[in-house]
Image (cartoon, rainbow, N blue to C red):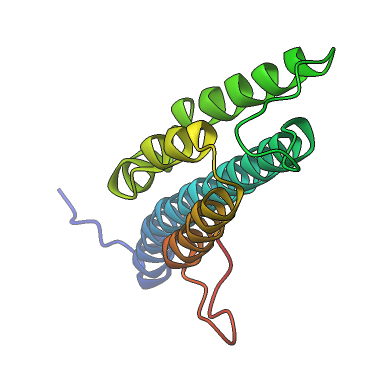
Length: 155
């Protein structure tokens, strides 16, 4: 029986197709990981934006609702419901975060909001809000990898 030899071009072609397959597989895995990381960053950025926006709107609603001309007197008007709704929305927003939940717990955001919302002294309330807002911005920047002057990468 004569021995059969495989031509060199068949060997080379076979090794190239296996290499291409493995290379394509590695590329697919790496790009999938990058897309997943980008998806997480986008969701974190959205959650930070929603949280800061909702708390800011609620704070400004409180500022307009309470009668600050006469300390200790609350203006009971038809807008009372809008303040309680705004406060409830702020609390729901804090409690419903998924991607940034650990950062929110670490910074005691819900407790700090409750302290702010219950405050009767306007100057102290503004101080609480300024501190909470600065903390939220700093935490969002840290979480998203944004540096103070320039952003190295966006969230």
